[in-house]
Image (cartoon, rainbow, N blue to C red; front, side, top):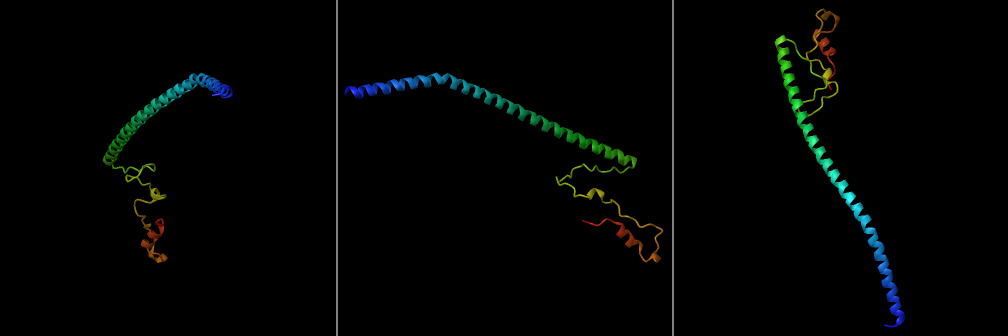
Length: 139
């Protein structure tokens, strides 16, 4: 090896040593950032677990409240039956099969409309036809 190539090799080694020192000086900062990120991940995992527990608690409470509502509705139905009162259905009640009632279903009459007793056949309209005309159109 001649003197020129030895000097060049020495320069490259000196340059690598300086770059290595710069990189080593960055390590504590990078490790600190990694540690902070790990702490944030750990905190986020704990929060997610807490939220899952809260969600399960709320689902259990919701189920319990639905059961209580059904029991109360049944008791109210029995009371209404003893009093001879027909309870109205709530327009907010959900269908048992999970289907939503069609618009206008809650407006349909539960009993067929009776023709007025004073209607005369002489008017040209039979009482049965008058009752059918008074019914809302079927969807």
